[in-house]
Structure formats: structure tokens, C-alpha cells
Length: 366
Image 1 (tube, helix red, strand yellow):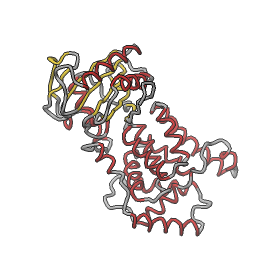
Image 2: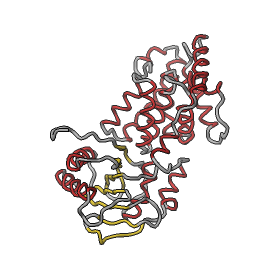
Image 3: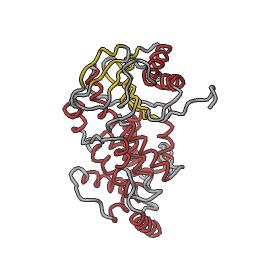
Image 4: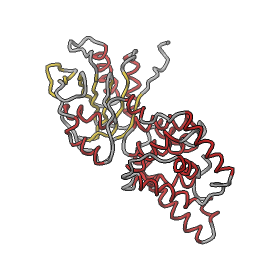
């Protein structure tokens, strides 16, 4: 790699949910990391972009194979500074931390402080072996400044996570495993059933409101349903979500009290639908996760969507938005707009003028 090449960085980046609890103590911030990321980080650099005493944006980098500290620091500082934080807190998580000020992670912290200063952003950097109750954290600029991490499962952030019906995974690998697809045999069987329905004319053309109501009914069931969906239910939902209007209207559920149940349904469908139909719930899951500040899950879901259908229009648009750091509030605004579009579409349909609505909305095939 030559000196003028950009360092490739795989990172999870997302903004925090608006109702997030203010955090100021380093130990409390470290204890909040699993709830901000959706999993317990290991061998990671986590950068928290602050807006006053609230965490505005979080960025995580895997440090297992990180090299080129100075160029990495330059890239990360540039990426995060675009979010206009008032300050940045960095946390290095790992078992091989250096307390003598000469290790590679100490150099990375020093380089980051310099690069953020170029952007006019004040920084604090801390290290901790693991994110767990009782672990000792230290400050990189003064290793004698240290403290204890409180129990992450006893924090207010944990209570907030539970209240949303969400779970924190033990690792990023465990988070990825929640989207692992079903067996090849099951997926092939459902692909055949979907093909049979489409050949029979189900869903083509399809009443978009009826398709949406089928999905919403299953979202309501997901609130307390414990048994898995049947093949017939999975296939019916796959066909319903293939209607671009019905799928886009489902975005409105992201700002509905049913949002948590909808996420559980999207997750189940990502695993149980074959490609390319699984791209529809995967794109919805990515948007729902991003709106509530779960960037790692949004990124994983988006990868699934684009793997299943690289030309999936909604997924492509969401990918562009995330790559350009679009604030979750903006995407939330799109969900609010979907509520208006559905009402306008139904009103136009009842007035026998559906074409006018199709000319004024953005839903397209895929």
C-alpha cells in the first residue's frame, strides 16, 4: 500500500436515539456501549460524538487487524467530524491494553486526538479490557486517572433497551447470527410456493391496501406470538411485501408503537424467505434499526438485502443514505411521509383516481 492510498476501514456508524439518557461519567459511557451498539464489543475502538452531554453518533472499528494508525486516525476524524459533534469520547476495548504510553493503541489514541483537534473537536480517550461490571478503565492522557465500570445490565440504558423490546447480543458475531438464513431445503420449498402463487396471479396485480393489512396483521401477532410462522404465512408475507406500495407503507410502522414487533417480524422473514424476496424485510429492518440508532444491525440487514438483490431499489437508496451519514431524523421523516402517502393513495383510490397518486409518490418496482 502506498502512502497516498486511503486506508480501508470497516466500521459501524449510527446516530443515537433521540430519547437517549445523558451520560457524563466515563464508566457510565463504557457501560452504555453494548446498548448503543446492540452487542458487547471486543478488540474495538468506539468513538462517541457528543452533543453537549448526549451521545449524538457512535462509530466502532474492529482493531484486530488495524494498521497505519495515522491514516486511520485521519479518516475516522474526517468521517465523524462531518456530524458536527461538540466533543468526542474514544474508548479502546481489548485485553492487550498498554498502560505505559508506548503501545500501538496508545499511538492511535494520540493520533486521533491530533486529527480531531485539526477539525476543532476536543477529545477524551479511555481504555478498558472488557465491557463488564467491575473492570477498571483508565484515561490515555493520564493513566493514573481510573475508575470502575458499573454493571451494564443494571443501567438506565439497559432499562431503555428492554422497554423497546430489544436485546443486546454477547458479540457482533452473535448479532450477525440472528439473521442467519434457514436451511437450503426450507428456502427452496418456499421459493417454489412463492412461484406457484405468482403464476396463479396472486399479487399481480394486487390490492396494495390488502397487502399492507396482511403484513400489519402479522406485525400485531408478533407482539406476543411465540410459535414460528408457517410456510403458508411466510410465503403470503413474501408476496405481500413484493408490492412496492405495501412495503413502503410498512415504513410508517417505524414510528408506531408496533415498531418493536415489526422488527421481530422483519428479522424472522429475513431468515425464512428465499432470495430475492428476503430483500424486502431486510431493507425494512435496516431502516427501522437505523431510525432507532442501531447502526450495526442496520448495516448487517442492508448487507443481506443487497446480497439477495443487488438492484433492490429501496436497499440501494438506504445504502446511499447510510454511506453519506444521513441523520436518522431525516429517515424518520420519510417514515412520517409514508403515512401521508398511504392516506393520499387511499383517498385517491376511493375517488377512482389512483393514477394521480402514482404520479406523486416515489414507490417503484423493487
